[in-house]
Length: 621
Image 1 (cartoon, rainbow, N blue to C red):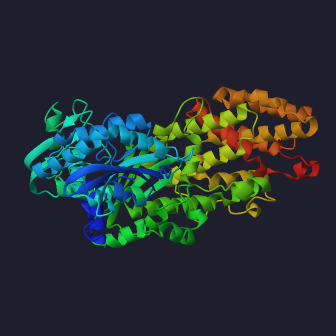
Image 2 (image 1 turned 180 degrees about the horizontal axis):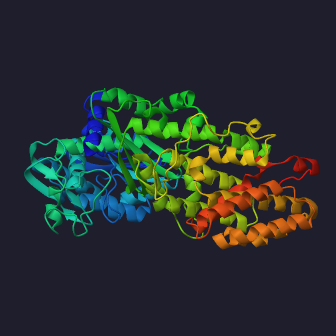
């Protein structure tokens, strides 16, 4: 992947005609658009002799002029341009202190002497300069922030730092220094060694040039040279030219290939495998009009992430001469903390993910049309995207975060690694029970859980689940209400089980599903007659097991007979038959039985009979 980042950097250099190296290191002090007030300490230049002229206020202009590069919090910045926090402190600790360190910069004797003359001019008038700075700051609006910088006045014209060679040289040196030294870890510099990126022998290679720190050198076991950070360059030696390309590639990716994913951010790094035009790929993926084109060409049903600006619809149309790395990250201040790296995602794999989505979305259209109310259909579509996964592995639930498990499932889905079926069922039931406990309808959550199970099963990535079953007929599945309407209950049930064959592979699952259906019929009758559902307490918070499932059937039958509204004897007979065939000591887990039970409850509308219509028995609210 590092080679891919370097290739992108090389592309940027070609497009920009060998982009000025300075641009690689310059940062924008007004990146948040709040630092629009600029204070320039102006020095007169009379043939190399410097004297203080005045403090000038300007509106913020092109950020490149100021050569800003943030330093460590307690240190000076790379040049005498700084954001002002409190003027006395910033002037003393950032601006004046920067000039006090002239001898620390690895400059020519001429450049060092020039800086010392500037430093003396500033030091001699430091009190006057500070007073003028405070006076100018009084003009600032209350919600504005300011920066301080240096300007040199020559022949009546004020030059910015970018126009002054000595400051350009210092910024280049400071930029190079970040590849060599990290304040918290030390220095890592190799001499006369092979670069791990270009594979050429170079005079110098650096240990801290790899973008987005995937490894750490402050923990034992991560350093090729043992425990010495100074030897860490041996892990990933990078020469200066490659470090620049990596920097440019990193910047391009962060600005143009940076997308959202279910509350996370990720970077897309395309890598050329065989053939193909890398420039064309980047023009498509990183082009300025990418999102506009995407919104015009992409359809809602193709969205697999549930976020605007999705890029995968474009990537999946490419050929397998590129592979893609996905870097999920969390930004902490200016640094990127890597949460997950997925490598080697081919367009063909994305096509598989999209095809599975298309199949499942088509399969669930009938449930969307028949099981959801009109109001629900206006807000919700039973279509797969990774937002469905996120629903069951949320950022926070009962003071816990499930980010790590969610990202593991995303990773395994993208690369095709096995996913634990029982883990997924467990989390689906957690979410359903939360809704049930609150007295809310569970239908939307349950159907989304069933949707997720279908999608993962379609991809054939469930571990410890696969049964010896025949694949579903591609033309099969429940297509419309006419498939069930008017049929005897036994045929309705068989058609439904056949349409969902991979999930109804045992009589225990079938019996539990149908009993959930019958239980909801009873709750509907109670709701119509009593405007209450006392039988809900018998469901033990949807914590089912074999004994409870078997116990509930006669209790439901007795209640229906007691109300004189047992319209479901044919259904009860089918349930009893499956109980007999299921025998004892069922292999299904309690979470599985709970899910099948509530799935039956929330799908009962598919199995209405004429008596229900006659009696106008609606659903429990």
